[in-house]
Image 1: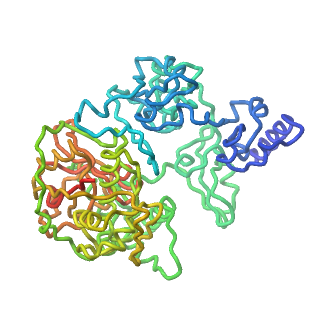
Image 2: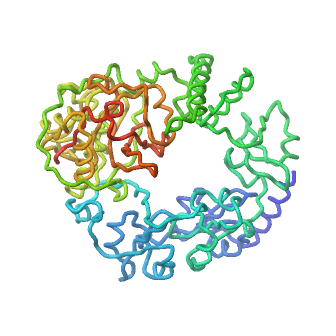
Image 3: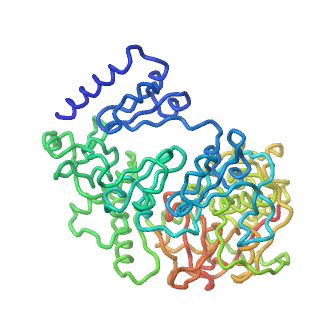
Length: 590
């Protein structure tokens, strides 16, 4: 095969770059390689390897892409605005730079001064947090020690971006149109820029490729099914070939046709779009769709599971998703996801607990101070929301809503960034009308923590997604609750005030059958109920906004992993108590 000849030539060339192997060659992973002063070099034709910097400098850039270690604890180390703007590199301040095209990033002074002001807005030094929206927040930039950290949130820049900014990978960017350029930097995530923007970026900081300058990769370059099946070599399609004997690989058409069908299963063409608008009618096509779904979501069944039942559930769910999307009359879309092979009854039992929760007993409310809430807010913008987690097959959503709320308020009030234990609540909060994996309410969880004397950290009491014996340890407490604020039932104005001026708020609502396949848009159901005895899922309201067409919505964090919905979040209609979301809202005083 042609690729073998190319590989042999490349290997011969590389062996001439050094006569003696050095310490870099001993590292087989990128992480271990970049911990030293080594370079991790990738190629379409040979296995990625760790090289001495001198060797790496001799490799042709048209064939190899080499990464070098980032400077240790320089400005690039800091991933939040507050940490960046208080830091220095070599006696000079770090700058937090925002752009419409890339994630906000921390630069050193020399880099920041080279960035064009038309594209980047850079600032340094301590500043009020989110002062243009909220003026009475506790200072979250104090010097309290950080027990654990969570990733920085995407920042919505005030600068407007062009269509090139929508492309999130190099292939999409450089194949979009000639006006886009894919620009890489050691200091910031690679991103797609407008061509005129790219021309203003300093070449000492950014390396940009356009459609004209991008290398023409062969099929062997692509290491994922989706990228492979979209690509071509020459004018012929690439094929993604699977085998039980070797790792799945991308081949060109000539190679794919030579592979024995008894051993390899090869396919070309675009990947399946899971936001279906129709379902194949033939049994063969439906089976093929099911096989694609299993591959895409890494699903395999054990000996005791009946695949026929999983297939039947998959087809029913595919028809539900396709029927919804085909109508096109709702403000949200659905897509098949990791729940696609379970029935609605199975999903309810696994993720929503045994019975709906009655929150009518949570009416007692501390008096909330009234104040003007901002028109829109998103607490992710100031990195005040912990990462999206995954509750697994346990109806413990109430614990994740509770810990998420506590993690935010602990940071906003005390400057402590600590991930907390859901398992502590699952195992120990039963006396407060909570039921472990069979459901509970955040307000009851906050009451338990208040009278228990605190909640353990997640690191000391890890989550196992099942009911276990209580192992609370008062020496491992990560947060304490002084009191609980229960927001007046069904009062979304008061809920908006709380979210807008205090912080994220735990809420509960009724999940109906289509919600598990939510993809994007503003969820506005005609099927769910809104009674206090109907809620079956607890989540965390982290903000609110209004669509360009004027429809108000809540920004809500879920606990079904970051692969669900919009990176683990969803938008739901505001000011109509949609699905009972304002029936039992609460937050802790810490």
